[in-house]
Image (tube, rainbow, N blue to C red):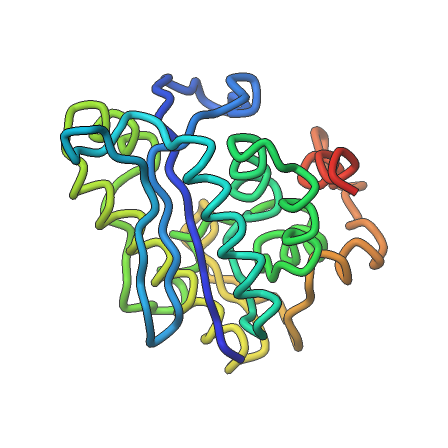
Length: 234
């Protein structure tokens, strides 16, 4: 598989309370995005001002350029991947680009192991928890909540390095999942658990599968939370 992972950072700053839903602050502005071909080209996507410095927010034109690149690479045979790319990254790229239709087309053919894991277990899992359990060389260098603050403070390179790192990490994790046909993660209790994943599925394939058994949960997250925006674009 030719893996191409991508990741975005938002420029909006807010302090989430414990168990607070990020979505209450939507819609979001983007600051920077990264695309990384596993073992190949790495690119950063952000908008520049007349002085050549990064702007606070990615423009519609740059978001459209990014979205078109993802679509073109997908059509050229690359396996496009993102961690929670269905529920977050592509949704907001499409929003800023003002092209939810194209974003939805890209999303349906996306490989999103987090969404696949959710559909098997009924709850989400973080990139960091999986990376730690699977001994991935690339590690997260900061909290996602800190990235917008550092971007606004002018620490652009730090955020650029961070978003590139997350795309590299996603590629490494997906390669490891394919090799072991399963996914490991560190639970909140510090225990390493395993979930079989014999093959990666596209979002479209996952949506054909039954919804997860969440009968044991008091406040389950509905699957539709990740994909309801697709109805706008299809």
